[in-house]
Image (cartoon, rainbow, N blue to C red; front, side):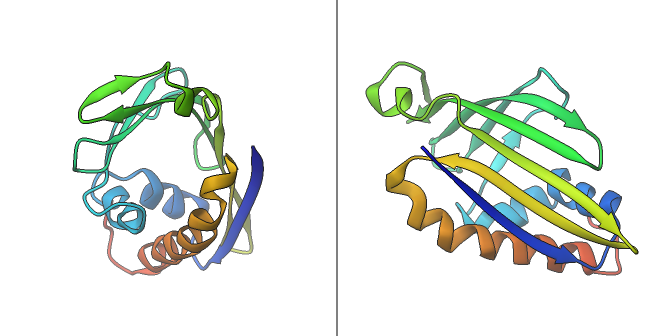
Length: 150
């Protein structure tokens, strides 16, 4: 597994960026870059289960490892969902299970640097190199909007 890091500077408070990242109405908007129709089932609390869906019966089963509101979120990926069935044991899952996806928010002078670091298997490096910057641009756009969306 390789570690990838992506970041963006957002002209909004950490609280606002956090709200956009985890908001029920905004999460599907910024994650649509990865899969149109993306949703998540979780309460985002430390120790909770998180189930990510792509709207087509595929997805991931994960665990919220750490949650420091408005500062840091760590998600540990445990398995896949294929055709609505959870898979924790296939060779494909075993080479990737335990990967972390971390969100760090650092605020300076009213602006927030959002840093994403994640562990990725070799075959998905290019995909994330292309999609994470687009997703971060959506987070920035939503966070900098004047109206409250989350």
